[in-house]
Amino acid sequence: MKDDYIREEITWDGITIEIGWSPEYFSIGDGKTMGHLEVRSIAPDREPLPMTETGYRSHWITPEEIDEYGGLLNFVEAWIAHEAQSRSWIDGKAKRAQLELF
Image 1 (cartoon, one colour):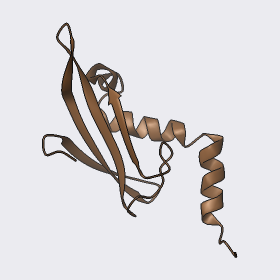
Image 2 (cartoon, rainbow, N blue to C red; image 1 turned 45 degrees about the horizontal axis):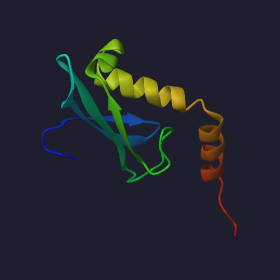
Image 3 (cartoon, rainbow, N blue to C red; image 1 turned 30 degrees about the vertical axis):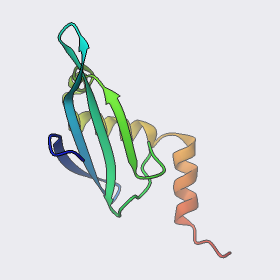
């Protein structure tokens, strides 16, 4: 991640996740900005997350949308919780938990 990002870490389901946030990445006019959010699993490295099979997700969002959730960590935790309810995540998690014989 770039050095000018706000960085936070959380642990979800045994996975350490690094969050990078640049709230004023570029101007979208009328005094508003578009922010850049990066979410990546770091331990285990590149572990799939509910919103990304690769363990990395880049997302453009306004600071106001982050504020609606009460801040950066609340937004990311709500996003993960929502995506963790999807059928694709549930099925994929079950498949990853099973030992492959062949």
